[in-house]
Length: 320
Image (cartoon, rainbow, N blue to C red; front, side):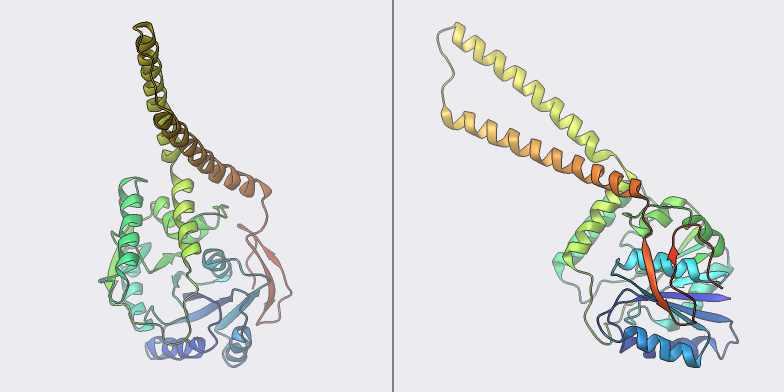
């Protein structure tokens, strides 16, 4: 069976269209499939729409979370409750065409346990968006060391059951899901497509969420920022000792170093670097504290098939 997993935040207009297109793709081919949809605590009637579809078609299973936790934690909820042999994560805004999913399944049947689907071109995006995206994936590939990640990133993916079971053993909260899957190292394949615009609504992928993803991706898989801090401190210490030696030498020869402005520049630059280093250490320290709490990623407020509200955590028994 193929499981289509999707998260929804204020997607009440898009979900019926997604469901209809999935039916047109899979039903004529006689493929057994299900749709697992997680409502990330939407402010509209998204969950009511999910419930209405599920009442007519038991292949749709829906969950509403008790608070907004973000797309990656919501995807974990969907994966934990999916029952298929192969699971494909798609966006509910229809920017991931359902008509492309048979090609994803074909790559899985040919041995790809992880199938990335990446954009052939980033048409319609602002130059700044494209530039920052390329910088991010360059850092992930060449600095963090994830060579198998697609050069321009992946929009969505398909995972074999074995990969999903391994993924659910990872308990990190503050992590990039794409980076984590790439780090696991299962056989990977990539296909490309042209991304259509959103059908309805506005994207909830804000600049703040993008910045958090960048920080999570770096702090979760490399200690390079801390190593750079050590090297920077060493360089400043060497220059400090050299400047101190120069000052003593000039004083001994009757030419004491003068200049209040130059002294303030050194002090302010040094303090700025110290504050930056403290901030980097704080990011690592906060994530260590957050992981040590071992709180569940999310709480299920309600579901479409009458199951009671439950708390899910990695390794928990899946709902029937």
